Image (cartoon, rainbow, N blue to C red; front, side, top):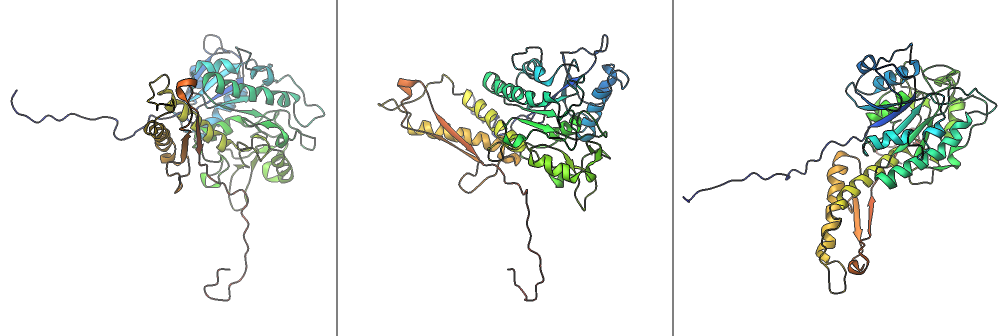
Length: 398
């Protein structure tokens, strides 16, 4: 062979990662089938309101479903994917969210093969009438089923999800359950709608805002801008007229619309979940961040499953192997989250998180490798207190 220079292309040097469907949710909506076009119990991938016509969905045959999807695309850009899954509207959320019910929400979770990040429920238990309580009793019983569904998806499919319920049957002035005393850190409840005195809630607005919001961002962030609806209500009142009700609902852990002095339009109060504020995952943004970190860690560690591990004479992992595993996980967190602004880099953890593997564990005798991964979340300014006064001394900042 003649003397020559040969150059080969390398690949994988940029550390690029595939697009992650962080905002992909399923809308599980009580609706009516349309002959030959739209079936209940089947997942449909929707990308714009144009798909309503394809499925034969109109305000005449499915008013609430059409409202929900139109409000979704009022928040989300056309082309944003959402999974639609219709069920009988008379079914309760408790029944639909029961993970042992293979024809309920579990079916759409399984059909998506772990892609879904959340399930958002609307227009269920429509046969129930408002009673003496402030919320439909189905909301309270559905909370536990929703948490169990999220835990099942995490443990069985390695696909953590959150679940959001509508505060169905809300009646102002009547007692509602205090969600801040609950233990459901995968579940949230929205009260408030674009229709006065509605039995349901604006779940399409909420789903659309989530679909367009990165995992670390609070859905109530003012800088993001106002929600699309021109008017939003809490019970019979416009949100701006229901400040006392909104404050009470916020203290009890609900998500509602609100207004801000000096800003036009409506915003979500916060992203509370149905759990005590002391829980690490008391807010949707923290839930979404830790769930994405779970997926990154799982996908990274999966590559090591059943691989050979170089060990010392006592059966422990060699230091170079330990360091390699730790660095691989931290690099994955950095490339898939921190570079996107989803984790907070610090001087001690520039990758946005740390992985620790005990080098004293005997892998030969146990066949197990125990690792601890901790990621750095952002802080959020929920209460901003300012002392304001006159400055009569130049340069005085105290």
